[in-house]
Image 1 (cartoon, rainbow, N blue to C red):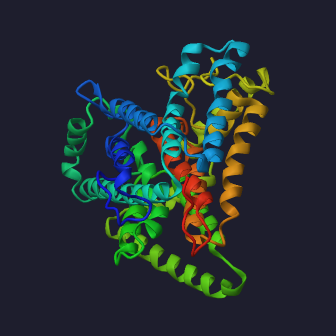
Image 2: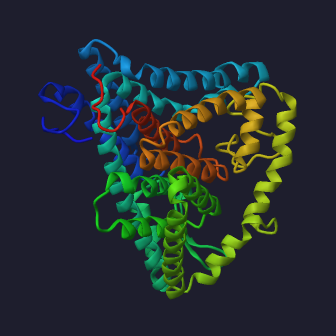
Length: 441
């Protein structure tokens, strides 16, 4: 994902300058999505939207100049198009049948358009080029996520240790992200914990799982991963914490083989113990240990106000689902007797029930079939590429769990993360057996 690519690098040659240049704007788009806050709007200009539109235009032009679609990636291309097309039925057809407000049904899933970048990149790049691009993409995401984590953890340290000056934090964020103050939370929670969270924090989950393959030779691997974990802790989202644990377990299981079970279990236990001790030490040193432990322990408690609000949504969403249990009510649907946000009435925090009400049984099964298919095809190459498969399956599971507790599955940030994961998946299933070079299309 850089401007130039030496001919000596695998997968690229002097004849590939057009595809290389075509990837510059997508790289800028990803950087902005990670660092640009919730909206990407600056002084009334949607920089994020312009970068996305420019990326699509440049990639389409490069594909037009090339004159053909790379056949090696036809299966991933058809898969992504099929996923978008199927969900399109619940955008344009099901809402008409269920008499859902079309304004909201078009507004809620608009971020699906980000997946167009995946189709264009796969159509443009040969297997070797895709491998080189994904490698650069992973480094870009990891490095940019580390910058974001350092910034957010710095805000947390400032607000925690210098409480009398914490008024400076919202002021500074108002300058950096004007107009988005209601879409991020940086401040003291009711229990006294200074929380730093906005939607871009999800990138730190992807960065955590991508570090071992993006920066395999770095001496600071555990320092970097520790920074990302601390960032996820100060986000103070129990869904993210549970998702990280689930993703780690899946990633560990993917790399586990019969002949090294004992060694890997011992190493995993020791690493986890050391990491937990370091994290607890940091929280204790900043006076946040007791609050953090109580927050995690309350994950299964219905007495917590935040969890209680999500539980309260369940019966209303179930009644909405009962209206059209087979096909659902389509995207944009919401319960008229329980509106969480007047600006976005379709937005609910209890996403499993919300998706059931919107997609119905058929929609969930069909969309779920794509997710299962991507996971199973990645699982099939785990013996040849255990590290890459573990990072893909672990991060996917962690993000899926984290996104089930907040209305962020369908937003621009989440869809861009999905686009990155789909590029990793397409590259993973097209990688040749070790010792062989990728075929040319």
